[in-house]
View 1 (cartoon, one colour):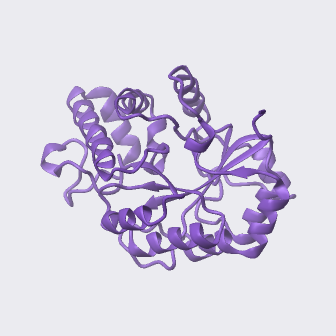
View 2 (tube, helix red, strand yellow):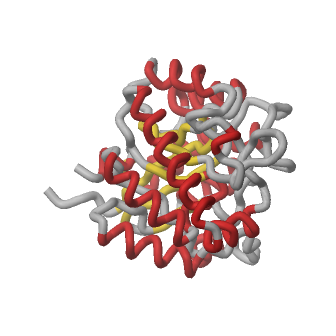
View 3 (cartoon, one colour):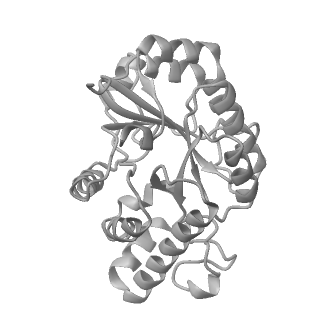
Amino acid sequence: MPAPRKRLVVTSDDFGLSPQVNAAVEQAHRHGILTAASLMVSAPAAADALARARAMPSLRVGLHLVLVEAWPTLPAAELPDLTDGAGLMRADQARLGLDLALKARARRQLEAEIRAQFEAFRATGLPLDHVNAHKHFHIHPIIAGMVLAVGRDYGMRAIRVPREPRDTLRRAEPGTTPGLALDTAPWSALLRARARRAGLLVPDRVLGLAWSGAMMPARVQALLGQLPDGLTELYLHPATDGGFPGEAPGYAYAQELAALVAPGSRAALAASGAVTGGFSDFSR
């Protein structure tokens, strides 16, 4: 039987970050269009996220690797080159990327932390639907190599490649120029090639980069109306409200939740003809 022309994974990042995020994931999956979530295994509300995930076996859960700006899995004392004075992964992403290129010790620490996060996910007992990383740091070539190598040991079958077609955004909002919040094209192209050589499923495109934190209901519905053929990942950052540690300044969390549960979004998805699921549903 031929694959459907349009396949869609709708993902929430930062699952486990806070009770507000976890509650939004549950609402958006039970009552909206959300099909997948990416778990931060050592975030403050990870245990709550796990309990909710176990109660929703149809929710596909993947690993949201934390390599910058959040909570490590190993003790910070074991990661002196990667953590700050507060025990969090460093926030200076550009400098950290350079340190990884220059310092073998930093690379050894990062590989150990990546393995620890995969191990923590395995300990949940949940099937590993996909892998991505906070702030998309897995596109760094050194980190990508580690994730591909370690992920092989843990049954990784799909990975996010953050490449967003600007023509789709322009069709969704004619006359607007989407902001280039993150230009990942060269490193994403390299990651795509390496992941495909490794036999991994990667989306043909990812929607949510340029408008990260501003995926309002009308915008999401317009994007659903412009879905190209192939496998698309649409990702958001829903929460019932803000005010939690680790929140991103200026993100419209409640509006992103509204976009996932709005009747207009469900109608736009139905009209698109796309088949939805997790990456594991499309890699069989």
